[in-house]
Image 1 (cartoon, rainbow, N blue to C red):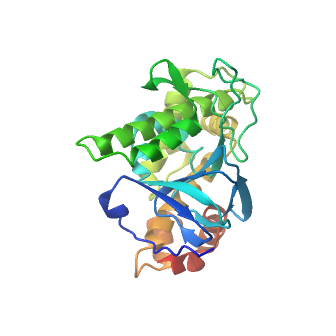
Image 2: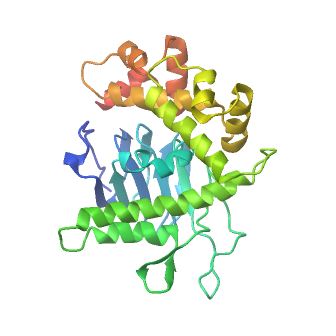
Length: 307
């Protein structure tokens, strides 16, 4: 089976927000400039990501954030959706979800009964707890809900329809609808964690404020006090709630944001690892190298080969 070779383009798909392709064969390691959803056709696809190989079955899909190094080791056909992650990242309503979306995860549909109502006892995703328990009702077919996997397939299929004035807008709306579904599922799963307090819309809003503050100020030497103030929490409570809700510390998330920013800079010709680290808010080379490898899958200098 022929290998599929790709060149990394620092421009975003010729300004196209969403791009789809049907492809087959092994893919060499690639640093993703855009977010990617992989949807196998009839047989499982093996994806190398984060130092491990994840098998994505034919009734599953896999989301991979930009900046991640991946490889695909399969001779089978697969559908791929590449999209500008800013579609999701810049939407305020998705802010609380961003710490969840910094890590690749497999999307599994919930089992459905004869009435197409999802069963709650479906398996969780391989990496993150996103199961597809929520359905988007009356979006495509009258009174017939779509599962997340069906929605991903519909986003892919919509690209094959004749161009019309609003075709790009329709794809963006469908993609946002998919992430609303995933966000509802993630919120349900995250709400079940031991936070020692009731999960409320106010708490989600405050966490969203903290996430947005980190995403906008990561280049600076921000402190826990700064983040807590942005969310209206006390210092200790801010740290506790964030860790209890997301399972990672505030500074783990801050480092992850900085690493993804550095990854984007490293794909720009002429940028050195030191410059990328400095512009992304890192003050220690050793810390930068460690965090970058953990988040992106390889050392900064190795990542530069994907230019």
